[in-house]
Image (cartoon, rainbow, N blue to C red; front, side, top):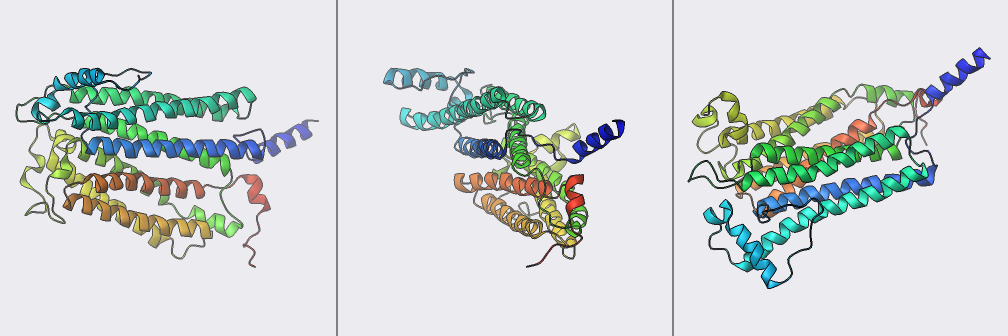
Length: 385
């Protein structure tokens, strides 16, 4: 009996631990739901970028956790407009704005907030249903609860960010804008939420990586640069948040030089020194240029290092697609800079950052080591047709 128990325990450890326990149909349904949730967060990031680039984010001067109905009557609109008139942005930037212009920026911010609340409802209802029906195991339930809490926290972080833009700027010559630290926190948490949802969805629908032979498993194990390259992509994306927070895209609209020099003189002008990397417009833009170049170079290096490695065709195709996406993202970044950050290119560049991060998530997920049970069943070399 002890031998049989030991063998059973060993067998259980070698099987794949499925996150969805109610069969293939439930697995597919939950996978679709999680991918849809990730896509919703992606659209939230894009809509947030448009809101920021159109300077709509400070149009709503108050916040309610549950939200409220939009202003519909002329009287309601005048009340909201009067609130906005008390803000530093109106007094210093939009003093000549009329009610119709205000309605545009108000609707942009209103849609951004309500789109986030709709995501909460869309996520909570299937989550509650899946738990009640016992479709998911405890590990997946805890992970999804954490992601739901992070999503709820996004609203609080967003209002915390907006509040910083409603305060009087430190100097009479400064334009009112949100704190770059708070904007970076808001965007980074959105990226983290997206990554968590996308990775979990992949794990649900693809509990085992694509592989058909031990040769391809050994080849995947040799792609050691995928994780560090993914980290570089993430850091570069976060540095973009500081570019946005400091309006650094509107300075030094030349490339490859910054104005007439490679490194401007005021790159380390702030004291203490560390402030330059987060608050100095020159340094922030220079950092982003360097990180973007490092990202492209590291992804190209990843491709170069795997040229002669025996890899699954899906992995090789994914690496090639990632190189193409990295090149496109750099092109978008340069075009956005040279064009003085138009809304269309700025939005496309932000979407490109999240798309490139998606490619890196998919690549790292695909390169996972298969379960011991699957490894035992694999032939040495893949069968050819």
